[in-house]
Length: 398
Image 1 (cartoon, rainbow, N blue to C red):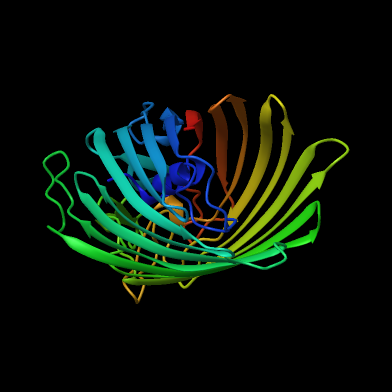
Image 2: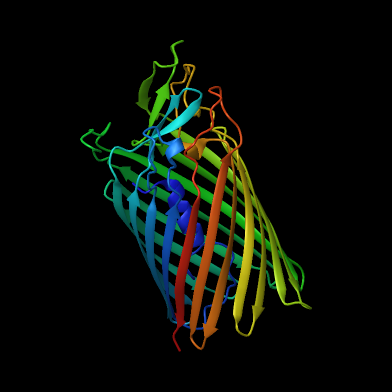
């Protein structure tokens, strides 16, 4: 199963034209298009000093291929299709244990190999001042199947200086864990449901400045734990005695996300600057803050942009690197994605148009560090660092 965090990382970075929701002008595109993206995603190895067995271990190595196309139908409608194929190999942290005063990683018993196929279809209707979009799709792996869809409506003011977008989305997921190194899964099949609603607005403050604000509410229910993760419990006074149990999380999760962004174009220099803030909060106790600064330059030869992003997250209520007290609710997790950490990422992208073609190059580097420890007093050594390179092409048919 390709982990949720990795899906989000690749999805946010690799969106193809015409397939992302949000604020769009109520103007049908001038031409049909085809797009291709090829991506290499590589996590840094688990270092020998962090691994219980004392050797370096390769983490996830993912190759992603994405294809997308958009075709105009009649005078006011388009259809779009997308296919993504992710091929993954590597090891993942299985659980964290204590070795003296340090936390050590125990990796999955066997090398993970999986391929995900993700496809979606959408249609958009364009009218004088609004667009209406519907999409449906599916994502399939060896042990995971998701069916998802969305509806998005964008309304543009008569002055063209304000626009509003709102919509709904859903996902129905089926999890069927596989045995790992002869270890039988803890169940045969479980499901989860996710629903979301969003509202975005964009306002032109003046001809060179635009302000964007948005909000989203999401709710998930069903099996929200990770069937491939274990948790260590040190409830005995003897620090060498511990037990391992399955990762166990609540069966409900509700979250809110608020976004604020300001874009400014500096006519004298040709530069455009973006400053973006995002706030996330959920009923698991996780709260996060994201600040992104971006500068972009456009000229006859193309577009070049650079960004830096700072991310800070609090830990879930039921998270600890290893657990040293018994919880009344029975929820336990040592998944690094639920820990308290700070992350910094930076990247650059280049878009070069030549006649009907555009060449796209995008590079990103990501680094994390633990920001807070729980009752165990131990930092989680499984936090990831990665780099990603994307090469793509867009073609507009005449």
